[in-house]
Image 1 (cartoon, rainbow, N blue to C red):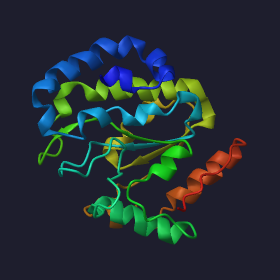
Image 2 (cartoon, rainbow, N blue to C red):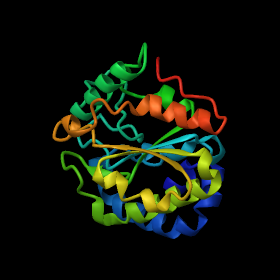
Image 3 (tube, one colour):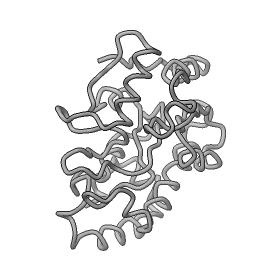
Length: 216
């Protein structure tokens, strides 16, 4: 199920990780009704062909509230109240880019080549970070390495917080936009005012790529 959810280009790039992904799926299958996001959305981020990725925005793990997680880092299902980190992202976006998006599902970003990838692709309902030991980081680290090798300096990676920054050694020549995490605990310690969205567009333009339209 999980491997088949990915675009064929990712299936090729991550072929060596298939046994790990299948083992994680076997471990999770007995508790499919108790995980976030729903099983059919676990590898949603990888539906985007690897060629189309322009920006990697790296998160940690899905929202644990039932119905929030949609398989894209930081995004929530349409119509849901915005979690606090996402509210802070929207506050910073409004101060950085004219006419910003306030749609919590972030699908328009994804459609423009922004890969919204969590380091851990599942968690237990009501239990943040509970699947950290399943092997997800080994799998997503392989994905980050493959992405960096495929795009080189043309890739822009957004790393918010110390956990995301641990991925920097995997990113090779990719351009990095880094700051504090947008969570309520750290947003006032370097996230607010960091202007990550305009920084991303400047980095894309530097290598001759089209900027992201962050508005809705």
